[in-house]
Image (cartoon, rainbow, N blue to C red):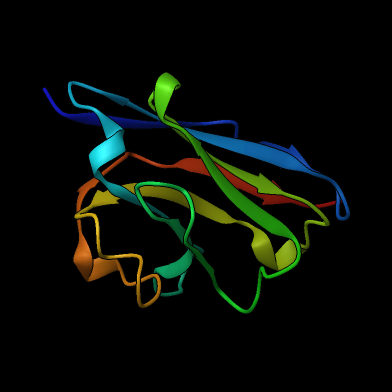
Length: 126
């Protein structure tokens, strides 16, 4: 069974850091582009970042550029999202998703992704 599982969320103070992980089971991630998305209460889902199959191409939302870094370890079948300098407005449920190899070439667009995890809550608050 093809599955994506996010982990690493939690409560952190403003200015703090978290690292989210997206682990795959039932399939190999190395043939898929991976995206991270988030959805805050009452807001639409937002594309945060994506990474190509090789890891050489990445995209970020303007709101997280310079603060978040996406990376992947295909040997561990896992993609990471390092989040630094967190702000209260980063509070949301974060989801990872897998899509075809080319979907990260033009941005972080949710409709291009085929497989989704269940999400992990990130709360930034003092």
